[in-house]
Image (cartoon, rainbow, N blue to C red; front, side, top):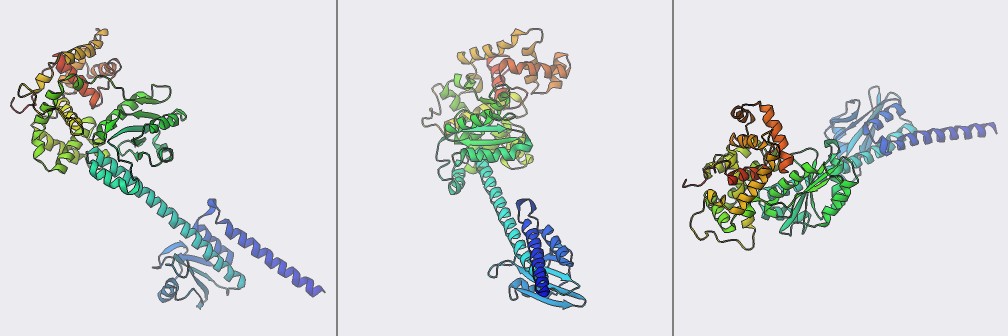
Length: 502
């Protein structure tokens, strides 16, 4: 009777121990404990020996190094042997293949100890190999998913970069494979959503969930806290505005509706609007449809002048011309560094392309007034190229020059009204400071020498100009070029020499 009781107690103790180590092993499958190295370390302690996880080449993945015969490793790794047990000197070894019998091996688990493996220790090794296999497969799945997300993100960026250089055909071709119909449109809105750089990944994922396949969501390559959303549908704007309004510390800037070929223009508008978004209660600002100087010029004359100015580029192959024009437009809109990040090229490449464009046009792009004129021509031609009803190339009256465009009465009235706002504070001489700074091509030190003041005074006056004109002048881009054109139209500055026969 006593013998049966003793036997029953021993069985219960063995069951308790098995249940205990099995629970410990299974705990490593919980989300918080999924670490192959910890599992291998646990096994070594559990069997009172040494454990090592090797890949198919014998490289150590986890645990302490254990010398193993290369032929044995090859036999187990290839599946010729599912497992092996042997004695090597004073060691007892168990070698187990990790992974299914009909699939490539995930790894090989090697366990050594000085005492022979009893049934319990052998079972621990076998079950641990199964758990390690599950963890390795889960890691492979996660890595595959991560690589897929990275590849998809890179494709989105590539599409945006193609649109930035006006290559809409290639952009549509790339998008069609993953997002059919997304770019089957002529016009889009572009939005830039801003948050803290450390929160951008979460913002990008939430934007993707919000818009689904109805918009192109891209992590901005130029600004760490920006996410770009290119959207054909108006509903995207409403969804983004609601999203931003509910999240303090997040802001939204949006463009007007633009053609796909003018994506870079839309981006500039969205960034400009974003600068004002912080001042709005809902954190949102859309680019205002204000009066632009080109709309006050004779359209036929403007298109004829811009076509004539850019004619030297027409002899280039189409893709080279588009590349130079797209890069130059971005380089005029932003700094070379930022344009390079947007396009995914080096800043030296941006500068080289702009230098080539400047050489072909015979234009000195170091001059602010010349930059404003070339910017006007490039944007005019972008609008003309995508217009269903383009104006005649040569208007009645012969050759058109830039100074002819600047004499339109409506344009002069607009310029005088805009710059006249600066006369409200005559003590600061904002208008004089701005004129001197533009004449000095944006160099505050040279403007200060001309005015007889300190360079910091010039910069302070320019900061005061921005809220009065409701345009950013300290950052290069469309706002600044409009102000430059206003000075040219008002006669405050002489028109630059950009026409070939001048």
